[in-house]
Length: 351
Image (cartoon, rainbow, N blue to C red; front, side):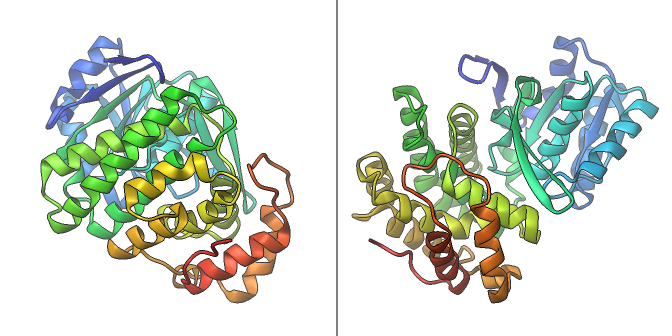
């Protein structure tokens, strides 16, 4: 289907990866460079086998936070094999590389997500250079087509399923108080969060539950569409600072920061965040998300990701160096309080 909001060809089909060759034909493409991380090479080889002569080659160096030097290397490889498109199979790291390639070339991209990150639904690209992560928005970085195949997600480990799902929920939660929020984006955010509130516990119980995986993928698309339509605020800016400057893992960082950032903004956006509290079963959105994450076994402490207590001051400084919109005024002291709670794994500050 052609989605009116994202202006993409979006395909939901269990086993749908077997139709990828037809999708390429429909788009007039014949030489796909398949992108993946080193850990997902087997998936890339399966896709290459499925699309046969449509596969021009595999590039398996996609890396967290999309380092610029990796993008340059991938572009050189695409030129060497005369690729006419890129097909990214994986999560945010792989899809981010596909976006970076498209930004710097004329190559269209097809995304085959294997996590719930939602990047495939957005025109947003985050890149890292010299230890600093920056983001940009450009229509050409949004994938031309997305193929959601629930069978590909059944092998996603429980821990990664949980953190990736919480990452997606973050897009929807922040979307509720965005300046650009509309009735459509609010409805999408609520639908996406409900899909995860219902589906993620089922995935934890049985990772091979294809219907639960299908439901959570639909939630991922909805949350990603919100991310790609309205602006994000404190949560995403803080996670980008931590990821780009301290090389913390993307989804795990989002999972830990989410309840703290939402609790901070709930002080001035309680009405907007009321659906979060209702969906996740508490009177306050921040505490509801913290309890939901803890119940699912999500990581709760930045300390466990390798961030040192002595890093917190510098992280707060980086996160407040460049002004950005947020519903509540941001100060370095406030960010430091959030980081201290998240570093120690304590419940969010409710004020």
